[in-house]
Length: 326
Image (cartoon, rainbow, N blue to C red; front, side):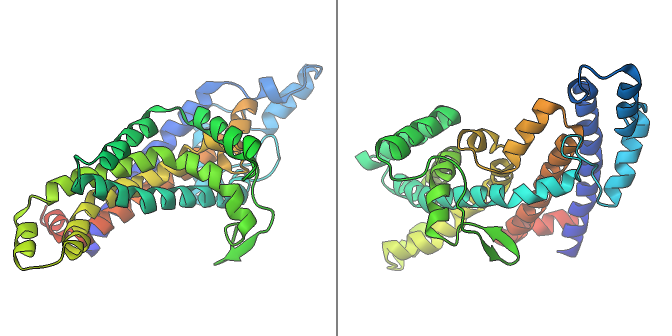
């Protein structure tokens, strides 16, 4: 296991370095922040002074080297707009996004696995066909349109749930602020989390159904039934354990997607997370915040990929042994 983890960590360092170059290069080529941040009535001397203060007068390789040196110390630069550390701005809003992503993942797992297993056990039943049709809609419908329709139905017409914002009552769990400890917090997160979870829910349903259909024909399931085990035990022990391997693998990586690509949902529901901060920063070409956001997302994906590899090796020891022998 130690060789497995060390090898993955070495790969992770290389990936982070390469992605840092690609991210910084891409943002560097987007445009000049000075064109947006400097007032139109500023004279040439004031303009040049602001450009020097932001470090935009230096060539690319100097800016990138300075970024690497500072990043190694945990400094990802100061926001051009807010004049605060970009990392601090993101970390202040990260709990809201993590709260939304965790709630969306819970919805996908709690509803997706049982529905997928049911559809796999009884593929010809009418409820199973309804479930699979719903999963196709979850893949096909645009997130922003679904979000607007949910707001119209549950917030405007029925008046059951708030349409925007985050719960006001904040509690602390392990030192992290969250609004999920109160009813008001769950009322605010339910609509955006459901909207964010629809694609992942559809994915889990189809994965669980495909895995169930494949496992039900395996010899160990037939042998378990021949021993006289109840159908519930066969499903819960022999079927569930084996279909969870691909589900865990995909969900681990998809959680990073929930955090990284919650931009549309946060914008529609005015959720105060890092996705909304990214949109505002892009509009103002706030380069340090954009780079810091992308690097945090890259780091998150690398860590999640490592955790998924470890979880996969625990569920299937052959993965770990093959990797060590290689």
